[in-house]
Amino acid sequence: IESNSKFTTMVDKSTTLSTKCTLILYILSNFDSETPIIVFLDLIELDGQDSANNEKVLWSSLEKIGISKSFALKNLIAFASDGASVIIGTKTGVTAKLCEKIPQLFTWHCLCHRLELSVHDVIKDCAGVSRFQSLMDKLYSYYHQSPKNSRALDEACVEVGIEMKKIGRILNVRWSASSFCTIKAIWKNYSGTHKHVSQTLEIELKKNIRIFFFRRGTWTLL
Picture: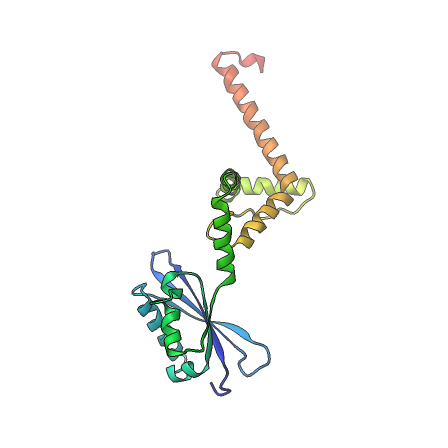
């Protein structure tokens, strides 16, 4: 404020474990230095999800740290957000309301969100992707939900001389970059995964053979 710096606000919405909607607010400015810095500003619980309430809490959050509305109207130069209609709606969205007060305001639909939307549009036209996603989800569930399987995979990777990479999910609410990291992890873990699955199948096969012979009362054959 003392340096009269121009600044940008970036917002995103999320939901808490108790299903309460929140607004995450960041601010970007040079803060009287040559290099712009991004700073986490506030996490606000929303009483309502309409654009009017979103705009209200945005102004309130800025005023809470000493950025008056008059200063913001003069120095706020850009506003970035995801593609939620309540935020970027052309008629009643938050960006539309801000542009009414700041005509020269530059608004930006987050590039990561746009890439994610593009990927989902492509997936709709690729029927084979659903099978691939199903396979990846099963691998994720098998190792993520079972610490025992995860430890076994780690041990198998050590045996074959590689470092185990964490397996996440693909094509879900996370960024496309996260899907890429998961696919790369599965690729690098391949020899360790193959060893672990082979050992598991061998153990299960022996177990089933024992049961097969036991039901026929011929344990001596084992």
